[in-house]
Image: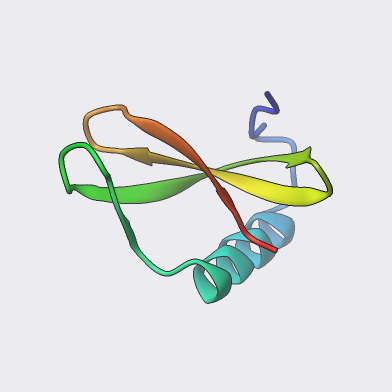
Length: 66
């Protein structure tokens, strides 16, 4: 798992957040229906880019963004 580090540029973080929001709208948590927020972590799996989303209660989901 890749951690978002403070060393990354703000521009890259904003670009990632903007592209995630454009592709994946607000996601409700399947368990408790609270709003999930993109953490900034991404990974590649089977040729797809997955973005990590986490709800207020700590449930974590990886959602395909491309």
